[in-house]
View 1 (cartoon, one colour):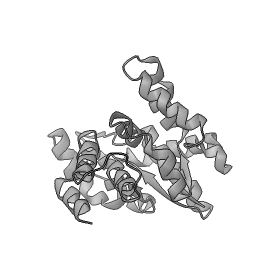
View 2 (view 1 turned 90 degrees about the horizontal axis):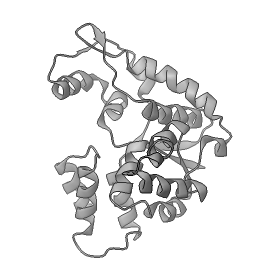
View 3 (view 1 turned 45 degrees about the vertical axis):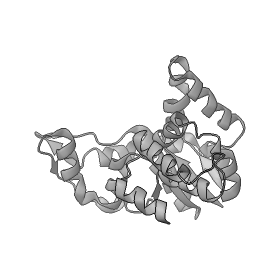
View 4 (view 1 turned 180 degrees about the vertical axis):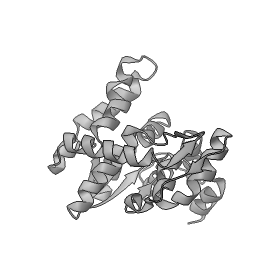
Length: 224
């Protein structure tokens, strides 16, 4: 059994680019579970479904849930309440890493940390999994935490200090971006559009809708 855990941003990116319809075929090809937490569902379905501007996207994602392309933790025998409790613990740790003017700097969201909490539960059960997340901060927190100070200082145009040293708590997680998901879909012939510029267009579309991928990384993927 393998699992792909979706953060809000990745699904929003795919939705805004009209690419949600690749998920059913991709789920079959990868032969694994596509999971979301209730915190993610709140951000992409429960809250936006009552906002006219975002209602259609929310309904499309709800349809993926209804058809069991996207599933909740309970489908793996994991209670959402347990994920919520572990999410709070991870948020408390992550949001006490950096200080700005002697105040703690909030760097992660509840939805993002719920994906990590679910990943932890799957790891504990010996289930291979990866988290689909486009936001840069959470990935740096896990992969290169020493770079957080520079990243947040540049983002906020203020001096930020990295205080905590317990980085290892986040080192076990693996990530993929929407850009890499559409790359996989393209390579597996799951994209209806044909032509030599399609892959480039897909990668740039995900970048400009929020995926933290560089132009250099796009060039590399185009050549693979």
